[in-house]
Length: 470
Image (tube, rainbow, N blue to C red):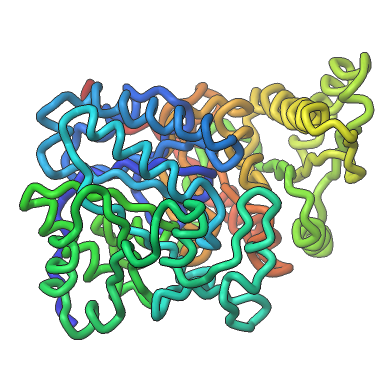
């Protein structure tokens, strides 16, 4: 099927956890909420910029307020001409298994656009993430689990304590999410037949019939399906329509005008000068797969293991304990790769607020250790766990903006290159490794590639951040 190339749109992606950029490369990620920084990236036509909001960890009211603040700030910083030229498309990027503030966040985007005179015609709902075995056919969303294809309502994802649901038909799902306020009959659908038989013309025709923020379910089982839809979106936007997308990582690729994955090997990973020859794995994830993956690394050659004792973090011993952990890591990194993790026994109480405060205190402890260790310039850092990867990057390493260099597998496990960061962090590959991703050997494979990259000849100086006009 011949597909016209999408327009060179500006793409602002609000990412509700740090893993949404895993299907694209050569794009910017802003890790703080400085909207001027994101707007600066988007002054270039055709640019894509992710802003990490971590809003999946917030309640709905907080998520809406944050979404409106980021979108409003970027629109105001871009100015009327850049924001209203038909070339800015805003994405609410979320989970391919339907968890998150599905309705509230796109509606918050629409509200900010409306406040600036742009009425959203349609909200595209595209949860397919092909690399993870999640696709939509006949309006029903499926997930591959343990080699078996299941309707998502039959998976553990649907029983999420915060974002659970009972419907796999995406029109019924939207009605369920809205508590019946949005009728399934009101939701438009772009079928596989529309895409594959009717092509861009038919998809454009369906989108042209959408008004006043109407939801549109997009079926997709392969990238070619999403490329047709992205081309039709480009036509509608060129004609003056305003569209918003709520999608998983895969749809971002055709919206950004990219094709195929950029899979990295050691030769494609530069390590800056004056760095140590060993790196650090930071573990925040408690899932069983993470423990299995760590054992596989040990079997291949070992990591020096350093444990943060959670009870010590929660009492008067905290400052001294963290200083001792950091000093041990600084000394060990001179000779060995290291892993730092929290003690495995979960400390919690019957009070949800108190349990949340404990979790926050423990997360802050991990970040503080990384902050103290970064000064010795480890060769690389891998953060294991979605939330951990954001906290370590933004607060532990002080990265404000990074470039997505590519992935270790198609659509999975991204490598970031810091562009706005402290001097001791520039030139250090940073790996975003979700907790429940990959096979048993995946972490060991990543460490092996990074080790091989370190052994390559080093540049005389660390790569400088890409200059941008203000």
